[in-house]
Image 1 (cartoon, rainbow, N blue to C red):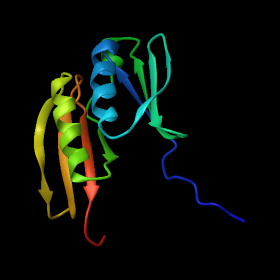
Image 2 (cartoon, rainbow, N blue to C red):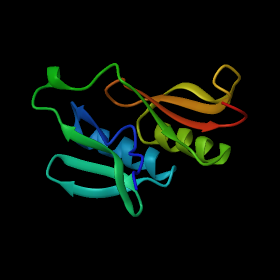
Image 3 (tube, rainbow, N blue to C red):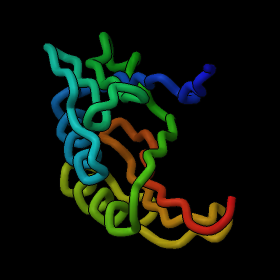
Image 4 (cartoon, rainbow, N blue to C red):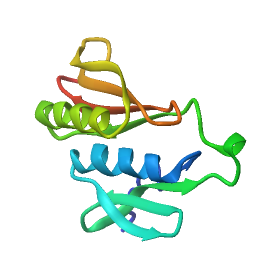
Length: 131
């Protein structure tokens, strides 16, 4: 029997300031039910309970120039309330709001967008309607 694999296994983000990045991602992703599954010096790996993939790996960049910038990463939210909680937690943990939670008709989804401490566009999306 053949099984379908997830499209993405894991993503890596390299932070110029690991502590700031960890504070941001831990708070923002916790609001979506995603927690730290693994932590070591300068590395935090985030995944859903009981499921280690797909995951997000946050690591300290070796140099400031090596930090991840300009990425757009979207996380699935189970409800509009989860999107709202993500936005509030991400901003409280050092993120900058790009777009407050709202309905986006072109995406058929309720979304919020926040910049992480290195300027990456981090989104929570709750799909609604037909795709």
